[in-house]
Image 1 (cartoon, helix red, strand yellow):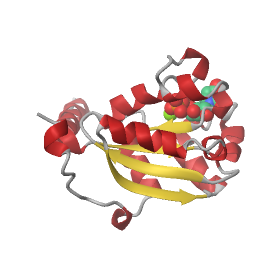
Image 2 (tube, rainbow, N blue to C red):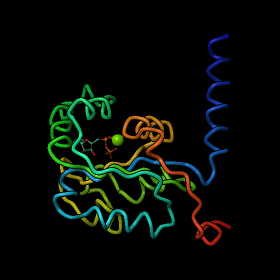
Image 3 (cartoon, rainbow, N blue to C red):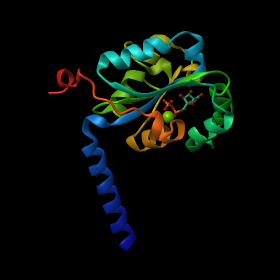
Image 4 (tube, helix red, strand yellow):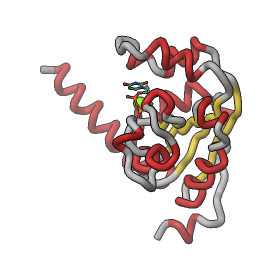
Length: 172
Ligand code: UDP
Ligand code: MG
């Protein structure tokens, strides 16, 4: 009973915290090694920039398999997990944090479905890739996972808080 009450309160606080984030919601977007090899970093940045989202963190690195194992740990029981961690650690990636109203949900729409075959034209995966195992980009699936992922890939001092002069022309 007490446990249920506490979890309801915790969920309420989490929802309120998410709501109060407003235009400052952040999502973790990563161009995977196949996207880097195919020269798609610029296209991804262009789409998020043109949408009106604000770049608050970016780094280009080859991540260790251990980092990928942590990043994808919710998928550890899936048969594709070992191959996935190997593939994403096999070459450089471009890791980014983007900020804006509904950045997580809208970011997922912009990416398309996990399987490019189910992704509509106009989405990144719908336009630019074919196979599920080479779907070129990662995007956080919830505000909670975005927080975890940004915390995993960036040190606090690597994230930049800045005021965009376009803000008053993007938000009403
Ligand atoms: N993946 C795969 N085979 C599958 C499902 C997923 O290779 O059957 C890979 C794919 O690269 C995907 C990643 O695992 O992007 C993470 O899976 P998730 O279900 O989290 O999809 P996402 O959030 O990336 O759309
Ligand atoms: Mg996912």
